[in-house]
Amino acid sequence: MIVTLVEVYVIAEHVEAFIAATVENHQGSVQEPGNLRFDILQHRDDPTCFTLYEAYESEDAAAKHKETPHYLKWRETVAPWMAKPRVGVPHRVVAPTERAQW
Image (tube, rainbow, N blue to C red; front, top):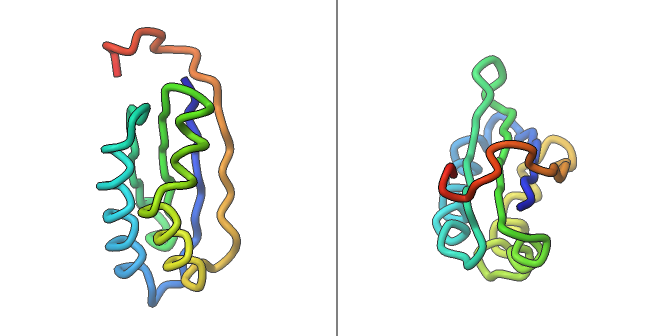
């Protein structure tokens, strides 16, 4: 299993449009084979900062996500709304170890 935390800073006037586009990407992402979670988190103290929590069964499933039409549309749509380039950091899951716990 692989989890990637993606930090995104959005220009303030584009926050609502970013949320709408990201929810649309989320809806496609959770339908992908190998997707375990795709959460959109908005920071409480800075509403222009978001964390995307993406969990996939494998590196291959995570890589295939980046080839999907919904992801490619999201990437192109939100790029001009970002205050700075997004940063994704992949993580190895230590616990929980059982898929049923997800």
